[in-house]
Length: 112
Image (tube, rainbow, N blue to C red; front, side, top):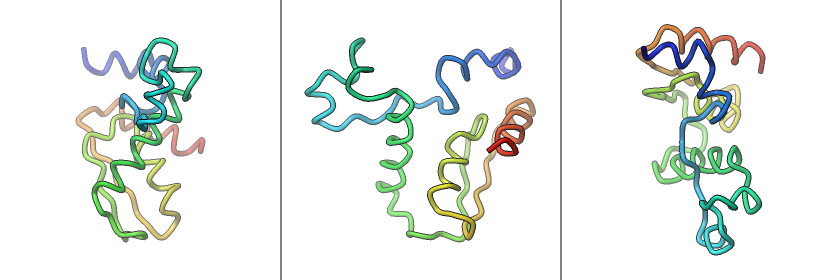
């Protein structure tokens, strides 16, 4: 069942708060990032955050938007990263189909 992954926190354990593959620059890739030995080039979690930043840049989002909607937010890793990036004047809302993911995202937001 879909929510079992959230309840067991198995994906969170292995993938962290983001279920993204990560972003690796051409320079990172030339050094072996994205391969089995790539963790020595760039941390997997750092690559995921870089992916979020690259998608923000690609979107041409204003520097300080009033509101951001994260559709398919899962446990909210990207939502929290965006909130930290833009600061307190930007309201970030995450949407997911899973009540368990909403519950876990709320817990993580309170911790951070």
